[in-house]
Each structure stands twice: as structure tokens, then as C-alpha cells.
Amino acid sequence: MSSRHEPDFLIASFLNEGLDELPERSYDAVRAAIDHTRQWAVIGPWKEPQIMTATRFALIAAAVAVMAVVAIRLIPLGGGFGIQPTPTPVVTPSPSPAPSAVALPTGGPLAGTYYIENVALTGVHRLTFTVPAGWTTADLIAKNPGTQSEVMFTSWVVSDIFQDACKWDQSKIVNVGTTPEQMVSALAGQKSRTASPATSTVIAGYPAQEITLTVSPSLDTSTCTNGNLRYWPGAGPDFGSGMCCNAAGNIDTIDVVNVNGRRLVFVARHYPGSSAADVAELQSVVDSIQIEP
Image 1 (cartoon, rainbow, N blue to C red):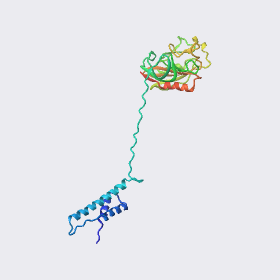
Image 2 (spheres, one colour):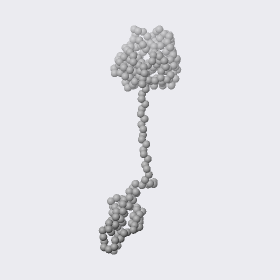
Image 3 (cartoon, rainbow, N blue to C red):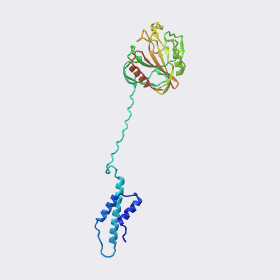
Image 4 (cartoon, rainbow, N blue to C red):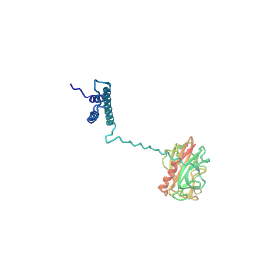
């Protein structure tokens, strides 16, 4: 009676614990290796050396089968093992450090980040902002100063305003209260300028109210008190026939900021003749404001 070949039995037993089916080429390789290996016979009764030899070949056959299974599992469909490329590390660029602010000069060209520390900012430790190249400073921060294409930026602390910016009178002033809302409401009622509706905004992370005030292009500033247009008593963006340029047609966007209960006023001015690029630069200055209370 013939018995089942030992290699076939070992391979089938191994596959019962692993893959459901080993490719026929793996069976063929195992059989060929065993059939062509010279057997060292022992004359006489069944002895230990013969048993060791049979066991050794059985283990070899099993090892070959294991290698075949491992190869089938590991070899990619498209070819050999291959060396997988090492992923290139992603380098996250560090953010560029913010430029250091320097004290705003009293005059001359500007380009960079500046800070202001003076009595006009009582209650505020420091105000910083960035100015593009081509700007200058004297009393105000401006580009194209003294012309009808000027753009200008400045800041003030305001407690009162004149009832009429053209026919201003020290005895006729209006208190602007203590909040941004109260101040823009008072500015909206000032004569000789046309006010836009007030809007809520944010400046440097602080709540603010914004309003735009426009002087009529037909206004003759020579008819105003002392020939000047004045918005509030004391220091302010006053101008007229005896100053740098005609006030007629100027447009002031005023932001009133509440800094921890202290009100701060920013004025950004341009004219009908100011270029769109310069007005955009003016807005970039306002957007760059940082406040250190």
C-alpha cells in the first residue's frame, strides 16, 4: 500500500495554519529540492542516523515552504523587494521676527515701524505703527504733504469739539462724553462737514467707532473764523487759507478707540485728488496700529 509523500504532508500541515493555498510553483520547488538530494542509506535495520536524515529533510522542506510564503507576502506586485525611499522631512519655516520699533523722528523721511510716547497719548504707554517708504513727518505723518493729493495720519486725545468747524467759537463747544459712541455722535452733528453713518470696528484689538467727515469742495475757508477750519479746541488737524492746503473737499476717517476706559482718536485724511494706491497705503498704516496701555 502506498503512503502519502512526507513533503506533501508537511506542506499541507503548514498551510493549514497560514495561507489557505500555496502556489503550485512552491510545491514544485520543494519536491524538486528533495528528489534531487542524494540520500545516504544505512545498511541493515532502521537506525537512528536514518531517522535523523529523514527529519532533517522534512525540516528543510518546511523551511523552504515558509520562505515561499514569506516571499509571496512581501514581494510587491510590481517587482522585487526594493528599498523604500526615506521620506523627506518637512521643514516648517520660522516666522520672520517683527521689526523693532524706533522712536518717531520729529522730521524727515519715514520707512519702517515707529512708536510714539508723549502727552497726547495720556493713559497709553506706547503706540506703534508701520509706515511705507515715501512718507515723511513734521507735525503730522503724511505723503505728498502740502498738495491736494496728500494723505495723512495722526492721533489725538479729544474732550470737546466746536459746534461749527468753520465758524468756530471758543464759547460754543460740545462735550463729547466719555465713550467712542458719544464722540462720533457729537462729530456727526458738527456743522460745515458732512458725516457718514457711524460703524463699529476694531483697532489693535480694541473696540472702536468709525465715522467719515467730508468738507464740501465748494467751501471757501477764507470765510471761516481766522480763515481756518478747526474741529476742536487746542491741538488738532486744523487747516485753512493760511496753512498748507485748502481744506475744501478733504475727507477725514476718524476712529475713536476705547483703550481700557480711555478714549483715543485716530485721524486718517485724504483728498479727492489722492491716488487709490496712496489711500490704500494710508489704510495699511491704520491697520498696523498696536497699542500698549
